[in-house]
Structure formats: C-alpha cells, structure tokens
Length: 365
Image 1 (cartoon, helix red, strand yellow):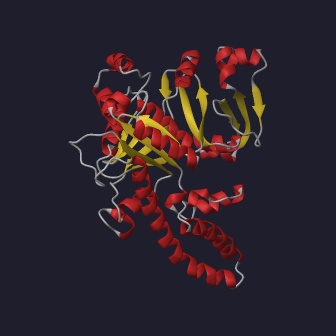
Image 2 (cartoon, one colour):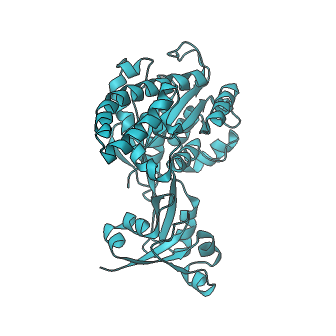
Image 3 (cartoon, rainbow, N blue to C red):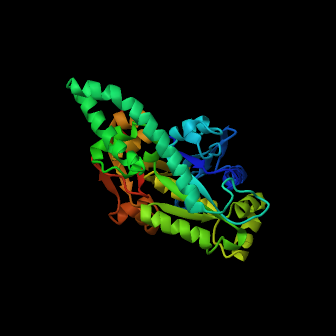
C-alpha cells in the first residue's frame, strides 16, 4: 500500500534541498529503516515512530520494520503552468499521480538566491500555485462535463451521479476556490477523488525558514500560519539548510547540534509524520521474536482490511483479530501480561482499527 506526497513549490524556495535532505536522512538510517530510490526524484522514507522501538524491546524482536511514505520531488512551477509555461505539463501530470501535496514556501531572505516573483511573499506564492492548479482543474472539468451531461440527460444513473459530483467541483472552481472544499457525504468521497482533481488533494504547507528562525519562526511563517488557519489547513516549520546539515552529520552528533539551535528533533521527522497524518493514515503493529513491524491503514479501516495489508489471503479468510491497545501492551510488558490483566481482546470483522493497536490475525487458509 503506497502513499505518495508530492513536494511542490515555485523555483528557488528550497524544495529540492528539502527533498535531498529527506533522501540523505533515509539513506543514512540503519538497516532497520531501509531507503530505496525508485527514481531520481522519488524517495521512500520511514515514518518515525518511537512506539515501534518500545514494542521491539518488550517482544525482544530481532528486526524492526517501520511503516513508510513516499515523497516525490516535482518539477518547479511558474506562473502560467496551467497553460504549459515552463515545465507546466510535466508538473501538472506529476501532481495528478500523488495522494497529497506538500507545498514548500520560501520564508527566508537571501540576496544571493533570486525569487521568481521578485519579492519574498509566501502567502502570495501559495496563491500563485493554487491558482494554476485551479485553472488546470477547471479547464479539465469543463471539457469532461459536456459528454457526461449528454449521458445524464438520457437517464443513465451513473452519469447523473458523476455529473452531480462534477458540478460540486465546478461551482467551487468557478468561484476561485479549490475542489477540496466540496461538501461531500462519506459515500461521495471515493467517487469524487476519482475525478482526478489536483485541488481536491489535501495540502500541507512547509515554511522553509532561515537557520535562526527554525525554532520560533519569523514574520513570513506567521503569515503562512494565519493563512492556513483561515483555510483549515496545516503547516510545518522547517529550515531546509539545517536539515541538510543534520543529514550529513554522524548520528551521535545530531542531537547536540539540534539542541544548540533550540530544536528537539529534525524538522523532517515532523514533516514525515504530518504527511502521514495529512493522508488520514494510522498505524497498527505486529510484534514478536522475529520482528516488530508497523503497518499503515487509512483511518476508519476495519480489521479484515488491516489483515489484507499484511497479505490478501488474511483478508479473504479472516476469522478474528487478536488485539491489544499499545498502552496496555507496554504497561503489561507484552502479550502474556496483557492476557493476565484482561487487556487481550478478540475482535471481529466490524472492528475499527485504532491507532497503535498491536494485532495478530486468525484466518482460514
């Protein structure tokens, strides 16, 4: 189950520096945190989760396998991308393939690095990119809606339903608003996502600040934070230059270096976790002498779906899920203690997996 976050932004905002730091960090991680480069601009990184280390220690696991998320470094956008300016067509095609957008905004001043718009205005930059995506979505939908309208008029039920969803998006886009603001029922969300609209994807804003602002931010990042509050979105504060330096340091020196800057952990850890959360993902665990492993499911997934993430046969033959809440597993020092304390549960096919559940699945071969 692969989940992709596309890293986007205008040229010279620190997007590629951030991506390079991500990949260097991942490559430098121990064997327990494997990294693979799928393509030059695609990095598969471990999601930091201290719970996994605790479970492994209790279960005396020989191996630790974290859950992962993919980041894609997408070609820089310029004004007019929706009309093919710059690498516009490539940029838009790559965004359509990701599940969420990580939008890097320049929140630092540096006379040696030119800004494509001639001034430092992260909120304006965000609006530029959003506008290009909305224009591209609008053009795409207006072309596609014509044949669907004809089919809907003929009484075709599926076309009527698709047209209703398209119109929800068109009303927003024509009003200069992103498609993600559509008011959807739970049943509509799946078909709506199939429309392939870029502005329907969730967005995380990354404020790329100078080294001195990495801990507390600056006036540019404050402006972005105010913007995200109005949108109901989220932002993360990061200094790409610091992350690049951290990635090149020996592991033993990283904590001291970060501490000297008033930081408790690399900003990339926050970015990875925020990207994971942005996609509506949660983690459940399996733990034993062989390995302690984190698994990814979407929030709201039921036990058979979790079993299917491990192996499709587990979902087909699902019987029960042996389940222990993470806190109970740690407090009771493992499965045996949890059983003795009455914290061990057998859950059926309707059980909704909770973040942190430690599970073992029973199934028919």
